[in-house]
Length: 234
Image (cartoon, rainbow, N blue to C red; front, side, top):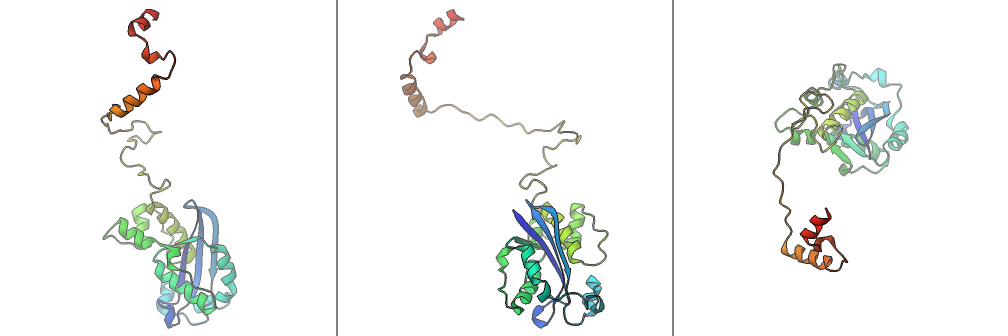
């Protein structure tokens, strides 16, 4: 299963008021694990950079002035993501900006149903707790000390690790390292097991009747031999 972890940086909060994408970062996952393939592109927003946005990602108007516009990179970007599911932290924000850029160029908008929102996943899994990327990195012990600014590719790489933990670690569906885990941590030794009473497997009357009918069709069935005769053979 191919998924794309995606993040964008922008000039502001609302594409309807003229704000644009300035950076896109994507990480390819197969079976929920990074393959090593990434897509990263700085984008010339064709407008100024507000100071508030610059403080978040550190991308200046001068730095972005010689970068390609979204129109120049849209084909490469769309080819990379293909028709894969998009894993996004606060998916509504990024999807609104991507769709604004696409529709501006005459492309159809992508449906929200194509995205997985890791903020919603985190809030469901940890009600009342902080769900921002830094807080989730701390919760899962993911090193984000090199994150001085928001960066689309760096944040996508961190989110790929967070997403893996949100779905249950490297073996989704199994609670690894919790109940029943080895205390010593050595090769599965000293595993504590919960004792369960054996379930009864007595045959029903209907099953016994069906079994008897089947045995009656066999020649010299051992079930029909007299116990004494069997004892003499032994």
